[in-house]
Image (cartoon, rainbow, N blue to C red; front, side, top):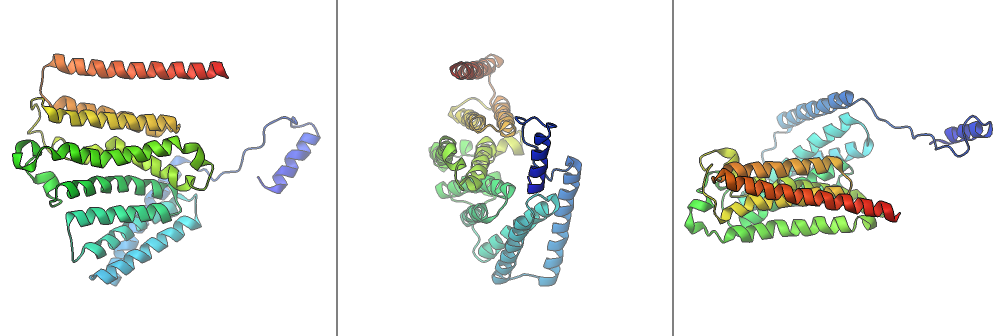
Length: 338
């Protein structure tokens, strides 16, 4: 609130027009109708695409050095756009488009002459961490944390079981290839998700500390991105891309591999718990929808009797109901103690 506004409010209170104990006047915000923000955001992406096409036609980067210089220039330009206007939808989305293009150019400069699946995932992970630490924008940092989570998933995958990027989608599945070593699945799952669970849990428990310091500018987007990754990250992890790409294995018999979709549900529910702890209704709804998606994957992938499927869904519903009752009792006890 400006000094003039404060003096005016003080005068109104002195004359008795506004009660002395009344609330302060609301801060002036730059909020605009959602459809205006949407149009400005779309315009920002269109402007970004046209700018990138123009730069590609003029500069024609065909070497690693040229790609590196172009990518660095684009990232610097995106930083200045984010810093110049913290509330404008046009510059915000234009900066996002330019930032993504800059990241792709930098990745191409590194991988152009020495491409490998593991190198691509590690490069993406490093770039996303860099964007998270440097870009002065909450949305950009949140997306960087989400993409870093996905890059971590693929980094672990190619460390544990080297291969090409095409092998994720087109190789013979673990379940049908004994030489692949089925024991690698639980090892890869633990190496992938336990560090992310530990990071999210630590951020949730330490929220009062980092919210009271400057670290909140990084910790909040990081926590949001990791919780989003925990919700949906297992969809792109092996060996369950087959559920998305085809139905040839639908109705397979239940075996020990069935535990992985159930673990995906557990990760999504942990993300929902984390969203509840940090009071984010949108993130909570996203995590719940992701859990239902994982449940649908399990339901249609594994063929068993409707009785067993009903028992599984009944147990899951009972667990959720008990959790809801426990949360309600906890809130009632907290309200009674105050």
